[in-house]
Amino acid sequence: MLLRFTKMHGLGNDFMVIDLVTQHAQLSPKLIRQWSDRHTGIGFDQLLVVEPPGHPDVDFRYRIFNADGSEVEQCGNGARCFARFVQDKRLTAKSEIRVETAGGLITLNVRRDGQVTVDMGAPRFTPAQIPFAADHEAVSYPLEVNGQTLEVAALSMGNPHCVTLVDDLDHYPVADIGPLIEHHPRFANRVNAGFMQLVDQHQARLRVHERGAGETQACGTGACAAAVAGIRLGHLKSPVTMRLPGGNLKIEWAGPGQPVMMTGPAARVYEGQIRI
Image (cartoon, rainbow, N blue to C red; front, side, top):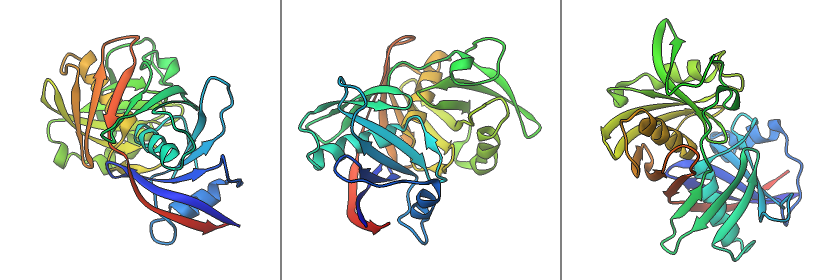
């Protein structure tokens, strides 16, 4: 059986996208790991799957699998690619698309300039909702990592995030500290570890070690989480331009209880078929 797919990226965060509305396939973690391998497979950070909706008031169901085969709740860069994909494949003619994810409902808007704005929903700060082991909700928490105490912000953007402010992002040991935070016992479902350097009140730089994928060129939910954390800490003001290795995202947030709006590009790389 041949399965059609599209390779896409959002600021270098790359995806294999499969339409399971008009095609049918059984996916397994082993198969996903084979496809994600950059030497012997297609190579990607996440696999995005388009499925028919489970509710009458949404347009599609959107599933996300990491390169290691694990399924996750949300992916901001993937959401933008998802929106472009369903339009390019003529699965919808809408410019505003409501999508069901494991992390909740999101709304995608494809703009005339090709940029995509995603309503990521309101961030969650209650430790149990992240989930994160803490006695009470706080703007930041001490976290013991590798013999040192980091001051971190913990929140959920539909998936868990931990944000650490750093002075020198270029030389910070993301490859060493990122996995330790990802697997820290206080995060029951693991966590995406973001490292942010402030530029001014409306700009910051960010590197993200993504749960199940390692450091990526860009992380949409990570950019949202970092902007929210910076605003709550009083360092940033909306709108925020988040500068990632793969490019820039615009993040807007009006405050607690309000949705985070993320705007950025999505690009198609190539079409392919793979035998399963």
